[in-house]
Image (tube, rainbow over all chains, first blue to last red; front, side):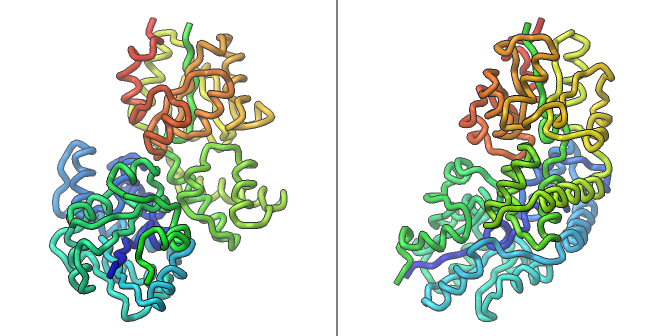
Amino acid sequence: MRALIFDLDGTLVDTVYAHVFAWQCAFAEADMAIDGWRIHRRIGMSGGLFTRAAGRELGHELSQQEAADLQSRHGELFRKLLPKRRPLPGAVELLKFLRSNNIVHGIATSGSRPEINASLDALEIDPGLLVVERGDVLRAKPEPDLFLACQQRLGVRVEDCYVVGDAVWDLLAARRAGMLSIGLLSGGYGEDELSQAGAFRVYRDALELYHSLDELGVLP
Amino acid sequence: MRALIFDLDGTLVDTVYAHVFAWQCAFAEADMAIDGWRIHRRIGMSGGLFTRAAGRELGHELSQQEAADLQSRHGELFRKLLPKRRPLPGAVELLKFLRSNNIVHGIATSGSRPEINASLDALEIDPGLLVVERGDVLRAKPEPDLFLACQQRLGVRVEDCYVVGDAVWDLLAARRAGMLSIGLLSGGYGEDELSQAGAFRVYRDALELYHSLDELGVLP
């Protein structure tokens, strides 16, 4: 029995560029300038790791308080910039299809409620859908914990899980969890970056994945 | 005598992610949803081509009026989102170095004044620096016109020009102009995307290029 474990931002909802810009503004407000592309390439890793990496680029470690302030300001700006979340093409249809065909699946995200609630609402998910979030595990991506927690709660074997994600952090975490992974271009990474990070297949977005389910061996 | 021709957005100033988000908002306001990553991969082509490509993705051609409204709304939102422009690392130093070492160089951008004025100011460019902009030529990137106009006004031979850009449109236009090109990751493309589009060398940003000028044979 194959199972699919989905990342959320950039994989199912079109939020990556608003996240990048919100981080950019949060850092700029605090007189810390970080290049957009460097932020982009770090979206999807845990917020703690992200601010630590940002500190390294800025040349001075951020204090816990600074990191917490930046994270909270990022959240505020993000909600202001993108009050309405938009599902990526095919995401809603894909989740509906998996559900009505009893194909085991869940979501595992470095995000947290309540921040992710609007995204989950936009996806019209079934209330019973398993969503593993940041607070459910000790360490977020690229550690494998989120995917392993999702797999255990889904009651499937590690080797039967496919991770679907848009960021190299998803693919690295999948590899460390012992799972196969599928990359989607909808988060703005290049195809080769995803392949090189371990994706055995790369699709444009959830819609192309939906139309390619035959290639994964997950159909009943 | 070698010459360097620079793209502006994503190459010298950190504006790509604000441009993406401004386009995303402009389209969303007009009830036209376009994925962030698809916008990102089209930044740097001419606005006219961009709206035509967007129309194709939306499934209906945009009228000239719609395209003009979207472009103007994008400009408004962009100025509001990013009132202050930030040079990318090394950009100011690189331009200063080229000038004081009499290495011929210019800027060729799909952008237009007055929108690009704040970026040029942030770069502290010399008033004498040649800036070829959208309105100076009939067709913008990926047509070669901007680079060819810059080369002619710099008074150098096509085969002596290096184009420096962050987008595949820069690299394609360079190729069509018969010029060598250098890709920078600072616009958020992946390294392989830039190499495959024809960049004979890819650097992280203007700073790494500045430290690698020996590799290009442009030093006196």
